[in-house]
Image 1 (tube, helix red, strand yellow):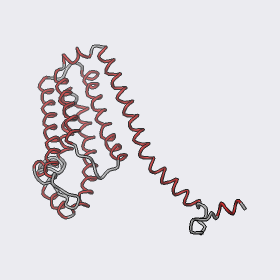
Image 2 (image 1 turned 180 degrees about the vertical axis):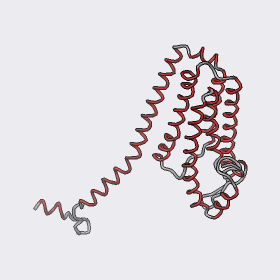
Image 3 (image 1 turned 45 degrees about the vertical axis):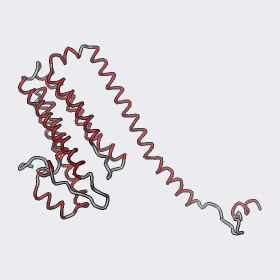
Image 4 (image 1 turned 90 degrees about the horizontal axis):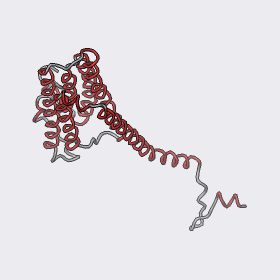
Length: 256
């Protein structure tokens, strides 16, 4: 009798509701798990980031204890590059627009894929200079590297500012294809500028092997980014973007 009452419990109108079907319960469980997954991924990413920052701080503290300030005093172009780079990263965060087409997990994956080669570049250039050549790079080479970095900062930040300015009046129903400013000459000025900033680092140290590797990796990443972004832009703008592609170059005017 109790089992029958559990299976066919009466409602207020006198009809039986029936028990919760196993398939329905499974669907609810899957929905809950799906909703919790992004939260878990974000928490895991934050923990990794916190650990990475702590480890970098520990390494920095050890380096200061070993007298890295004396090294910086002898390598002023390195100090200038790092100071400008810190300003570039903070400025980039201020003018960067939120990515609307990517999920938080995908955005994190893309950024990690970009940052890892950059960290390798930062480690490889001083290693090559110290253990392959020794001494310091010629002053004119380091000065040229600093100039390349500043040029890249001007291009990347300027393109982000222009992109935000020209699209400030857009709406979801009326998207706008930016074809002015830097975008009049190349389709991916932000990536081109960011690459120049990274490419300036091995030049600061006079590290040709790292510079060549940076060029190769940057070309591969640039090709992948170009294909991904341009596929999305074709879907969004259609023939208008195809016409824009025919009129402009991807990264370097009249070359690529």
